[in-house]
Structure formats: structure tokens, C-alpha cells
Length: 239
Image (cartoon, rainbow, N blue to C red; front, top):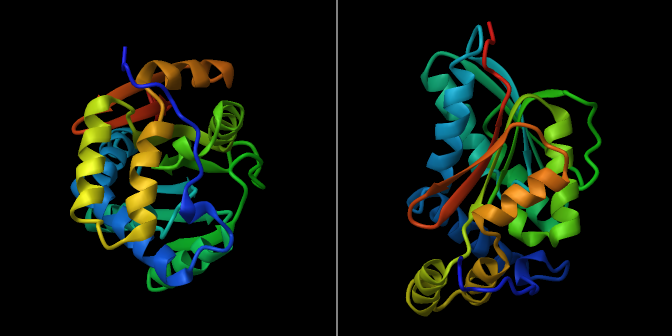
């Protein structure tokens, strides 16, 4: 039991009228969170395990709610460093975020940025080998989170990785400390950080969401310091 109830709340970075400079700074802070608090590493760890079972390290990826496309860029670099190729479509539904993602990903020919609603993706069943969603599931209430998971599962032929914060009193304390120190002068991140933890799901709740979405074979992993990952692996026997 977490002992910390889930509390709905609005995050400033989701607002259509958020100041572009503050949004850019918030997305920079999120990149740092992914870098230093295991967000990127967790996604790559689970994706690498599945990709290793493919006949060749050449695969396609859909990244949903991409933010500034740091995860797609990390995946693309990871594959190239191993002599392979990952072609990634990075999607978001916020106009300001999309603009920043396009700017951030412009130099990588294997990363393409497109607009898409995570709850109703405009792609065919099994259109990608893998689908990803990082640090975004908590932005959706339960009903929409089920839709997002169902869509992620639908478009992915080989596997799904959903990484997000794990709600607990310890994680809230850690983020409140960051808000009071590192993010003290960053009003959007200072506000959104603690709200994100309060909106996040526990491992048991994520399992229930996956079940409600009708996803088979989903497993939920926990990672330090306060991460979880929902993984659907269909690569067993690939090749």
C-alpha cells in the first residue's frame, strides 16, 4: 500500500497558453529528470532486451507524448552505436511541445515528429515494432489512461514500454526537495513536479489499467529511485 492517495490536478505545461520560454525550460528539466533519475535508462533497458531478440537490430518505434523527443533521440543513438538502426516517430498533442520537439530532433534523420492524440492514434494495427510512452501516463485520468494503453498495444507488433513515476510518499518527498532547491526559480517545473507524483499510478494500479485495456502478457517492473515500467514483450521466439 502506498499510503498516498492519487490526487487529480492540472499541470501547467499542459495548458495551451503556457509561456513558450517556461515550457522550454520545463521540458529541459524533464530531460534532466529522465537523464539523472533513470527515465531514459529504464526505457532503453527494456527496449534493448526485446530488440536483441530480433533477427537484426533494425526496427521502428512510436514514441507517444514525446515531450522534447529526448527518449526517441536516445533510442536512435543507442541503435546506431551498436551498428543498427531505429526509425522513430515521436508524437505529441500540444502545439508548443511539438514545436520544441521538432527543433530538438531536427538533426537526427531517424527521428520524425508528428502530431497525434495518444488516446486515438492515427496509425494502423501493428504499424510499428515497438511503442513507447515515458513520463506521461500520469497526465491521463483512469479512463483515458486505459485508452492510451490500448492504443499503444494496438500499434505495436513486437512490444510496448510505458515508463512513468511511481506514486509514493518517498517519491513525493524527493520531488518536493527538488522543487524547493534545483527548480526553485522554475515556476512551471516547481509546480508540476509534485503534482506529477500525486497524479502518478502505483504498480498495482498500472496492472489494473492494463487489464482494463485488455492487454495480454503485461508485466510491471519497479526501478529506483521512483520509477515503474509496464512492459509487453512479444519478441520471444523472434527470428
